[in-house]
Length: 263
Ligand code: OOG
Ligand code: MG
Image (cartoon, rainbow, N blue to C red; front, side, top):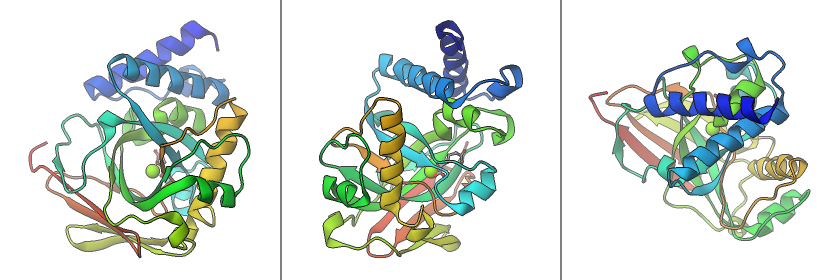
């Protein structure tokens, strides 16, 4: 795909994001869109956000658990970018007004202290991290009906990212074994989804390993001080006005957020 096509598709997605209207998935008109071009469209979309003053805070991995692979019918880990304007503070109430068809899902996050370059092992990833905790991710797809049948569509759309919330009670990764912790997503005080941290690629650190692999294959590295969402271990749940949502991860604390009653 040439530069002009990449810019045009990135700008269509960017307008859909800004105006909160859905568009047809890209592969309807561009069936040969591949992952390489899809990441270029994502890069261009991030550049448009940076031109509006947004700062990159980190990365989100997607499709790292069976539950998500089944829900979305897509089968390969992918990444998107997180910016400062996507962050909601823990405990905040926010409105769905700027979103099309939002969903929410529980996540485990890490923060890196040092750059991770090239292929890295889970131990090297662990040694480079200074925080691990509970997070919520709010997804929104710019595509009609939150449906797409190909990875390139979702990668181009910055992996359906919309907002994220980092929790309280996070730990220093070297002080805690995060292999097999219970993760609970509560909606209005009731458990709605449950999973275990090992459901994320066998261990959430493997998500960082995969992220570094994908970045390396693109000639990039994972910068120091990056937030990384490792991918939901459960299915995402549709967000409705008035909902109160909380994630609790055993030994890693919790994150919560509320949605305003009016859309
Ligand atoms: C893609 C994003 C997936 C996750 O945690 O697996 C994701 C989607 O579900 O639309 O964020
Ligand atoms: Mg996610």
